Length: 192
Image (tube, rainbow, N blue to C red; front, side, top):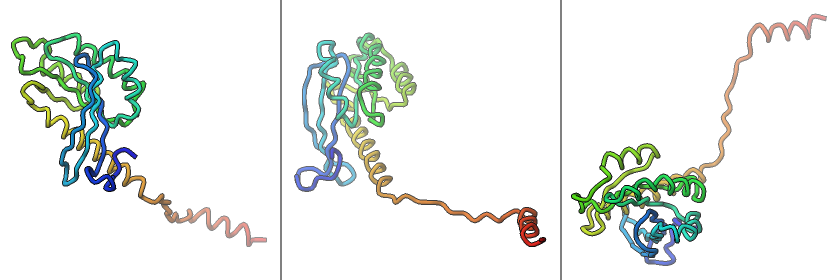
C-alpha cells in the first residue's frame, strides 16, 4: 500500500506519490527523499506539464496521486485562469481526500508579474487549499512546498490508519422509565 511503512526496502519509511499539474513545463519524473518527523519519506513526483497534448496522459496519474501541486506561472495570466479547469479535472479523476496545494511559480520575475499574491491566495482560499509562491530558478519556497504537502499527506494517512484501527463501539445508556407509564402498566396487569 502506498504511504504505508516499508522498512523492508530499507531506503525509506513512507512512499508518497505526488502529481504536479499546470500549464508549464514538460513531462518529468523525479524522486526525492526527505526527512520528516524522524522518518525518511520518498516522494515520487510526476510533473505532467499540463499542456493540452498531455491532458489525456495526466488523467491516468490522478488516481494514484496522494497529493497534487497545482502550479501556475505568475507571469502568465492564462496559466492562472486555467487552474479552475485543473481543479475540475482533479474533482473528476482524483480521490476525494487527495491533498492539494496551489503554487504560483516564477516569483523571481517580479517585473513581469501579472498575477498578484492576493489573487493566488483568494483562489486557494476559495478551494480550501494551502498557497505558496515559489521560484524554481532560485529555489525560493520550493523545499517548503514539498515538506508541507508531505507532512499533510503523512498526517492524513496516520489519521486514516488510526481511525481504521479503532474497534467499533456501541454506546449503551440507561433510561429511567416514566413513572406514570410504569405505574399504569403495573396496575393494568394486576387489577383483575
